[in-house]
Image: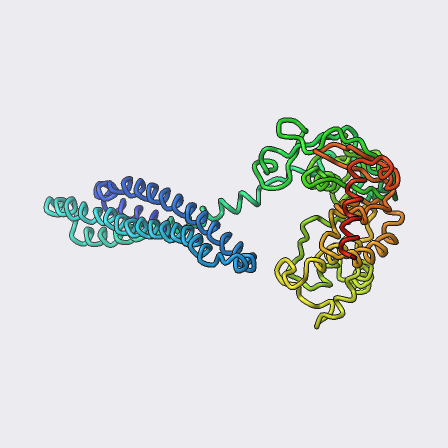
Length: 464
């Protein structure tokens, strides 16, 4: 609105000046192109500086957030002074870029005022000559000077508006990068109805998967990416596996063998090559994302809790908070007793990323969050690694009732966790090297049998 008013004022002033003296108007407008070039140059410089400042601020705030989130680790390793020194570098860079901006801005307005002021010098020179020659009256010259003053002020104000615009443009550019980003995993190939519900049969057919070389989605946006299994090192190779609906598959193997990746492909957190992952006989890309993920209860290896209450975190996947369903899920996850000991029960705030809870309590909260949705497919990715064996057995006892009739993918390093699964597969370097039931794998004497014997020995030593 202000810019429009300023523009109208400039046009009206010029029209009146032309009416008084066309030739004098041309003379006083000679500096105008120079002013325009100056505004363009300073505007571009200010825009670039603001972009650098925004990048420096992002780096600085990321550093601060990281140190606040990991303050206990920093203290435990006595790195307070080292982290303070590390903070100084992005902080000094941020201050330095702001000082450069202030210096540029301090030159901008005086330069613009000086350039605009040359119009008054031209008016005194040419207007004086015309007055002496009788080409213009003294009253007209004074009036012309008044309208020139009206014209010059909008020209100076233009610099102020330019500063605000460039600041906003630099910030908006970073926002637009996020707002216009398109997800690389979408419903473009979906052919099934949005209200479809999977029965739960999962099949991996000649699956070979490699993470993309860049962790970017379409148009450079951050997010999950696609892979055709070529180029980068393959995480999964030639996986052929069928999980009947309602059965439990356990996945065992050394760290980095692809267990988590296999689970993430079922939830379409990463995109598998088309036709290699099927749900109920349909390629997973044919399922609408909402219908697919609504039917999956997923407990990731790295538990994430929101800065909410315990009850709110458990009921996260529900349309509204249902205290009874949250309590039932907590009981199955052996969390209800812990929650009763909290001062505010289910209304207890867990803090950022669940900082007020123990590792085991976090995992059990995530398990309760997954089962409260009553999913057709349940994925537990090393979900019991932070609980002791007694608590594990309680949770598994409750989960067995929940898992009955549901397709379950159970990933674990503990053979005690997976021994009752309908089918166990052992992954190594992205390939299936063993498959069968617990008893069958023990008879073969391979990797699984060795792992079982080692863990059995460890338990005996602990109980000795």
